[in-house]
Length: 304
Image (cartoon, rainbow, N blue to C red):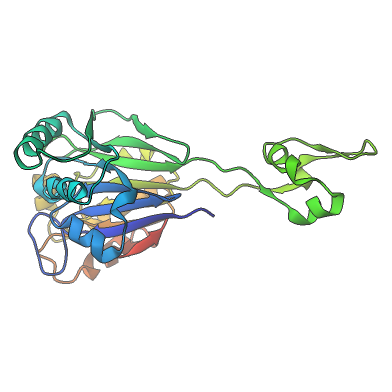
């Protein structure tokens, strides 16, 4: 299967700690890197993780709280210092465009490459990026200011050729693309070899949903049905439901309820409040609802 991985560069929340960096992730799919949020220190974490700056072409910002975007202008500046020439595409709510214009004009007057900003309506579900490898959709969320998550969905691949059958029938290599696209093969004696004998099923389509800051939304499960891997913020535990409600965040148990109701493959927790010295209490609470739950930590690499 083609690589489809998630790199965790930061999984803390607003108050810095010595254990966690602010939220930053990188999705790796078929040789390309897509950054999801860009907290302070993101460029240092990129270096520590051994990820190539040159392979990042798209940055998705969920909302304008500093722990999700304070690292953006520094990252863009570093790209310029490294001699980047390719356009960088940045996605976020419209106000981010104004912020970027000001920061670039102030700090990056000779950037050397173009930053193309794509305004995002955080209130609707919409495809905002699409190429031959994957699509990215917005996931409307409920936070204290406009906020959305992102759904990365891999494009279907072609079936796998059965090499033993190709050799058995002496089928020329030139016919393999046709067979992969569903055609039968006609032998010289007129015998038709049906396509299903020549191929094995394509790899299943994988998907990754990033649910940034949000209060508990039971209806969110309807938008996430069958997602392969779900990252859901889990700022608080069962000891702080009032804080979660007040600041429009979720508890670990609520994140697990969304995962259970959406029938996802696995749940990843992150965006931990600094009040928790050991996040395993959050893990245990989530696993009481959805067993296949994991904590994220910096430099985790997770196969989607």
